Image 1 (tube, rainbow, N blue to C red):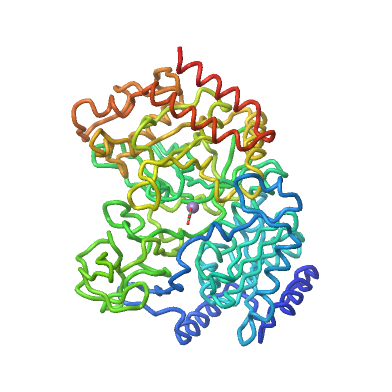
Image 2: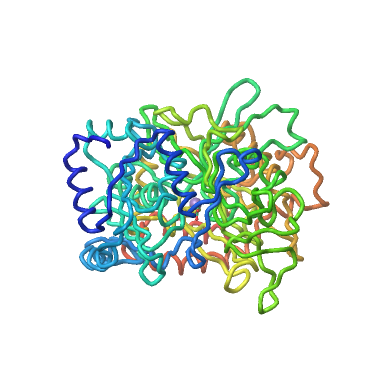
Length: 593
Ligand code: OXD
Ligand code: MN
């Protein structure tokens, strides 16, 4: 039993308990002994499976319901009093309607279950960056994942006695019924209600819900940034470290970049990479006039398929212990496997739905049956990562030299280019986009805009969000330089021109050289593009003319792109900042000159 002096917290827990009617209430204290007891209970209840403890110590497997395997954006709402405050890119419900609808589902949802109270801090406990949340949940899986992803327990309760502000997070699995599933954000009440799901992105409320949707709203009010960005440091042999933050839409390689291992050809230069975070960056302007960042999380919630020693050797090391796997294949030796993992394809196993599986299995329509769900995940502590930053716990964060925006564009976007100014950089961020691949539903090649990679995560009107970016730029004496990268440019046959992954360090090197005024660049219509000779290609052979093609700016294609940008911007109507229309006009006139 935990004791808190915080009356607001006690009253709220009791009020939610009256609504959900759990049999009992357990406060999560953050101790190893409590975690181990919960792991045992969850195993006994069949919620998780203990994996082979010789090969995967401290690891477990969990399977979600088969229609509960990803974030459900159509069931995710921003509930502000005025619809306009949620903006044209968010689903909106009025707070009164949303509370009423969700109360109907939460009512009695925890009968026969325990309600766990999870006090958590996003960011180091007590840092000026950090925000506290308290999640009430009836899921042991949520508790065990939160213990990996956030700083949890008694230490947070003590902090809550010094300050009163916390995000009220209520979650219940209820009946895991997709027709009774809602992910509701009430930024004006600092409240999140999630019901009917057990999938991480919907239920680990410290992550997307608090650290992006609620935090972006608070950041606008309080004058900081909450962004969907990785943070990494690049150390030179002399010990000097420069940090960058990068926003790419989901499935564009943020996690792989955040922990890359230098390629063979650059090893001689002795770089060392430090991973601060792979998904979320909170950034503030410090007294030195530059932007400093923390990762509010302490775990990775990464996608399993495609993770192997070639694509991400550091992650392969990270997930060898203390990891919860979700929706991957279970092998007969009680270890796990997924499509695109290391090692041979197993002869048999149990698939992510709990059914017997063997290679070559086809469904009724003749389609291959996958062992692991394409969005199967692992939850794992950052501290396990060989490149984990030694500054994770520093209350000050790390100084950011460059901000990168990127997308998946087979055509159009050069491998890398630098914004002409902060304002132009905001324009670039506001226009980032990815093309659909054959793996997604919809027309292949169709462009989906995802400004700053925040489209599903901005907790308020995105027109106002762009204004916030512009305002922040004005307040910084030493703003980071802004760049756009595109690892996915392809030739006429659709073959990627750039090898990506570890080789991307060559582009980071150019970016840092630009930040330190060490190299010149070509001033093009879209921004500063590298001179071919300034990318270090030691040990990497591309076919003749590939680098030139990767850096090419095709004005005709860009003129077509500008039409699509205009259409996208128009939806924000009066809320759209004039400065970005100026950038739009300036781009058009540069393209036509
Ligand atoms: C994530 C996402 O899970 O962006 O990080 O969807
Ligand atoms: Mn993400």
